[in-house]
Amino acid sequence: MSALTERLEDLERQSQEATAARDAAAIEIETELGQNTTARAETLPDIPEELLEVYEELRPKKGGVAVAALEGGVCRGCGVSLSPVALDGIRRGESDAVVRCENCRRILVRV
Image 1: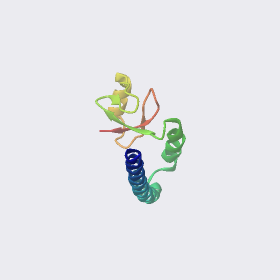
Image 2 (image 1 turned 135 degrees about the vertical axis):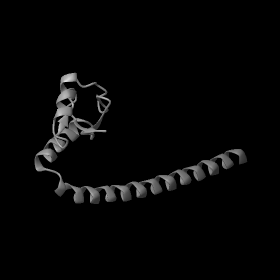
Image 3 (image 1 turned 45 degrees about the vertical axis):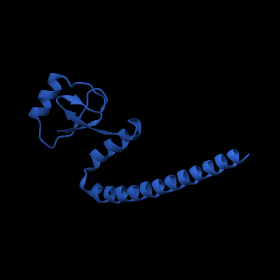
Image 4 (image 1 turned 180 degrees about the vertical axis):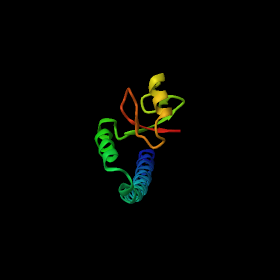
C-alpha cells in the first residue's frame, strides 16, 4: 500500500508543478498581450485607413495572418510564386504601394 501512497503523492506533486507552470505561462501571455495591444494602438494612427480596412477584413479570413513576406518572388503566406507579370509590376511600382498576393490576397511586405 505504501507504493500506492508514494505514487499518489508523486502525482499530486506533479499536478501542483504543472498548475504552477500553467499559471506562470498565463501571466506571461497576458503581459505580452497587453504590450502588443498598446503597441498596436500606438501604431494604428500611422496606417492609412484604406489599408487598415483591407487588413482587418483579411485577418479573420487568413487565420489571423493578413500580412506575409514576399521573398524571392514567393508569398511566404501561401508559398505560391507570383507571376513574372506581377513581379515586374511590383518592381516598377512605387516603393510604398500596397502589394497583394495573387493567390491568397494577403498584403505582401517586400524583403
